[in-house]
Amino acid sequence: KAGVTQTPRYLIKTRGQQVTLSCSPISGHRSVSWYQQTPGQGLQFLFEYFSETQRNKGNFPGRFSGRQFSNSRSEMNVSTLELGDSALYLCASSAWGQDTYEQYFGPGTRLTVT
Amino acid sequence: LAKTTQPISMDSYEGQEVNITCSHNNIATNDYITWYQQFPSQGPRFIIQGYKTKVTNEVASLFIPADRKSSTLSLPRVSLSDTAVYYCLVGDTYTGGFKTIFGAGTRLFVKA
Image 1 (cartoon, each protein chain N blue to C red):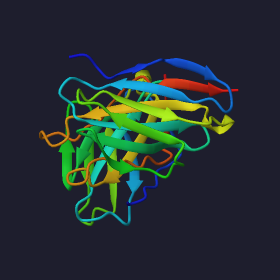
Image 2 (tube, chains in turn blue, brown):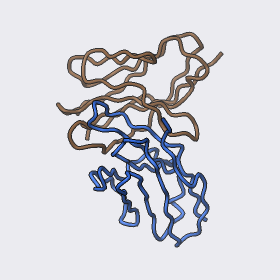
Image 3 (cartoon, chains in turn cyan, brown):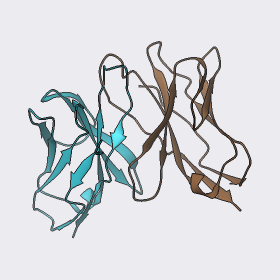
């Protein structure tokens, strides 16, 4: 079974621009979560989507948004990029509710804002 | 959401058993305890999850005392490839989905 895939793997953007990151979960997984990882703040939860609905949300500004499609693929968008948004963005999928509550993480997208 | 406290780092030698303890004094009744492993530039990988007493799988054991205010991840006979950051998480993913809070983790360094 293919793992979680994220595209692109690396991205360089300029302050003020916006960016869209994509995540394809493991086949059959309906829960997709997004995390931001930085050396200073560690791994921080952004939001979780389940069956196209945002089910949980972390403490991030409204510039961070996401959505999930009917095939469970998910995108997250960051508008008006700031230097502090430079981070590794991780996506995780889970079968949730099907007798398993493990999250499977993708390799991440490394975003650099200049 | 219960906050977790772990040692920042630990050193060990190949072949030794490593025990990493996590403190979670405010754990709620519905919370489960989950441990993840992360290598540099990779996403975390699930290791083990438990609610109470002891859980064992092919990779590790998880010991949870009766009061559930702490838990200990036990890695038998570590190797150099076990050098990684280990995260302890506490949360109720069985009702409201994931709102996972990762702490700072424990950086384990295994030496030859």
